[in-house]
Length: 634
Image 1 (cartoon, one colour):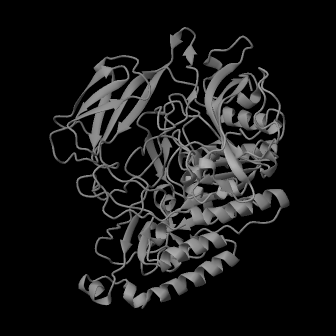
Image 2 (cartoon, one colour; image 1 turned 180 degrees about the vertical axis):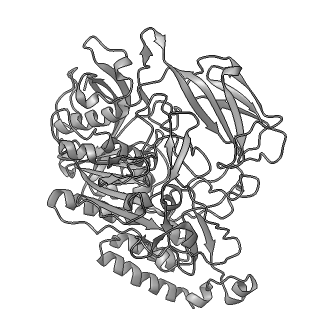
Image 3 (cartoon, helix red, strand yellow; image 1 turned 135 degrees about the vertical axis):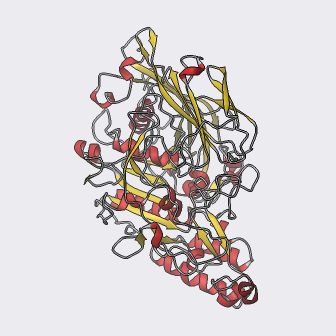
């Protein structure tokens, strides 16, 4: 590491809050400057690294923001570096694992949520890796060199898609890469209401360059092109940045901190007093896909030999990887059913064991490079129900013909049923057909992280994989999911399907489709397999991992990666009046005491199975007893 500089220390942080036997935490912020040898075989596959400028030592440099949370008393640290991959420049682990507010801050006691990660004694690290995130709100970023063809800029076709749900007549769009030319005839703009519709140039659709980095789109006059319309802009871009350095930076920063030695400039290693003995790579959503791609592209091999990360936890990634290590990469994109469907980063391999793919003709696995170098970590792959419908999660547990596969001994796969990918409020609150499903997966992932630590340190096996299967009849084609006939539950088999995509052209050409399957549901519409949260086992609503777009927003397509909720009727009379086949709250639980008793039975079972922590069970029960929202209790 060329430079690793701490510029500010806040001690204590979290408003001075103390965490169990670990005590108070402090926050360190600064920056790191790395230097990568382009001739080292472990860096050879970083796209365009050979075309990046070099320093006096012949190395390629990058700069990233740094943030560390650690126990003030270093002797209380648990010996682990918890390296979370940032999501669009923002920290997410404390929010989602600790059930904390969605903030990048750590100034107030409430910013730590339940305090789980701190009470466990983790040293938590974040480093900027995405160089196109907007500064502000505590976001962290990276700075990468621009690749050139000698003295000339590199040019290439780029696809820049946008949706504007405000229905504005004029839409200003910032391009992720500057246009190589402002010649309007060298670019195209098309519109389509749904992803599967033909690309069109309807009357009234127009656009212009504001400058090389911005265009202005004029929405067509036809009301058919509603607020869900997909505008696809294809143009010749220039100046690709060497974004694949993101993988090398995480490898090298973890290595540096783990070794405890000073940087090349003589700055002290901030963890010199207690270098971590173990490292886990953790990522949520975009950063979960980063984790999978990091492993797939072989970056878990240390420059000093051996593996960098002992464990890896990709969360809500589904079967996808990323488009980070590519020319003209757009790492903020991910392939959904309605939007951004045509971008790369979602192709074979999908699974952690080697498979032959009859569609692409390839034989590969996510872990092939790790296995070749003896650097494979323990893996906990954790998805929510949204990933079944919107991220082709079934491809993680089946082969390319739709048959169950066994996971390698070092891999566990879990599906948190009835839980959505995340939460979001549409711009005007009307873009989704159903209310938001706010159930969180924190209570389900916390015991797994406890199990992961014991698995790595003491070889104590964690809970077995828990995922729907074809053999059990709980993983089926979308038409066989079994949803009840409930007014407003307008599911018609829509999923984010996947074809083998030929990305040699833009837009890509679709080839044959992969068999993407979904979870089966019970008479209430709730998933029957996977990790089932206590409030799904004792339900008061149908809890879905998907939501559909409402009229005026591309009606019927899946709304991003948001879940839906359909509460049960309160009384039998109300249920009958609206012809709802699902039993009412009154019919299920004659009193709140009965409801709480049923919840307690299920929490006790899950605690005994090491699938729920006792303190989380108590949080859920306390909310139920108080008549509060149990979906957000833990």
